[in-house]
Image (cartoon, rainbow, N blue to C red; front, side, top):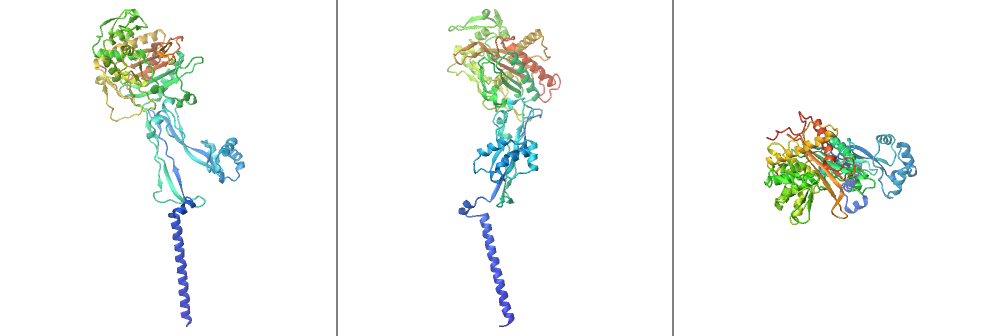
Length: 590
């Protein structure tokens, strides 16, 4: 054998060995890749996950008022958490965090002691201030982490708190507008999945393993923050003046059904049993229920205009027909029931019955009306059905069933008793008398979200134009009487003529049955200006003190506040003159 042949065999052997080793390495590498990418099920259970997922937060949409002012928005904040397994010295971490960022050491110790022994994510505080975040980033501490989270802020402060509501821990809507428009405001979180090494460091991201977050949409409300502030100020003033237990207020644009302002307050009084309670409100104003949509009340004489109009439409009484009002006391033709007028009159025309708010006059004509027609009229005005604002807990109101409707119901409903409504229901129904031109007599839906350019909802015809005009004319006399009363008190009255109706109803006695003799719900509803109404304003004063200097009648307790809201709001809107962003003025009634 020659030396060359021996070399060739040796070289061939070396190449073969090298190839063999390379093939083995490739097989091993392939197996490693297989185990990493598609490990067998029995190994997966033992090995644990080799990937991590991070959630990308979606920002909750902002809430704006009708002018674009920010009512609610979200900003990025950080919560502080600890990974006990990663802490270098768990016994000193409380002191370390205190020295580094001013974190309460007692809080840290308490959270760690209460944590599960196997927990690797112990939240110490849900929101750090900017200084604390900066300090912890400049001096990172092993086992201490910052987790991003969005924080809901309300730049308008306490204005419209009870209407806007609140979000929960996970930034979900819990109450008010935040809940009503939660689907729109909520964003869609994103995520990224990545392979990691043993020290949990990212290695790579597979195609398709990243999905970006989609922020929530902005919601623009029909509410105007300035008008809302005016209403809150005037309602608070009215409740204080009447030494009342609370109050509610609603302001609408009668042609679009847009809610411009809505608020309610409760005023606890020492030594006096509250007419209603709302424990959550004492925790935070935004946690209370919105009583403008949730709580019903008997409207009293403010309801007379609806029944007066229905009776007039049927021709049951002419405007000039004279009715005997029996000097303020009349026995109905059945049972032992008597009707009384607060301000006794001998005779009144049918028109004057509405102006003077005569129970006797209303009761006499109600006797002429078929019961089914009266109940049908109540429902036609929208009572007994929700206004569909979207706010949680909205009540439908209470309308006596057809089976239980009696002659007593007939006269009671004509005077605004044995009927229960919400403030938004009554304000919406009153818009029938405020809609101008050929649209008068149609019932708008209520809305809290601006829908400029969108198709208007269908409208329901409620009254003929001439009947609505007659009711408006009579109520203009009521508005003029209020202005004269305010003038005698030395109160300034604005240049905008109004039409409206007052109401005073006894509070139901839920314990003994019947009604309280000295506790009332006092209200006033009005629209202005008379010729081309731009606003409907309703104020309900709950349980005014009968012994207060201004008494308890709706015209004295709620009327002045309604008047001031109308004056301040219409001046703000620029009337007379351009009406800013509300619907353009329509032609006066002909």
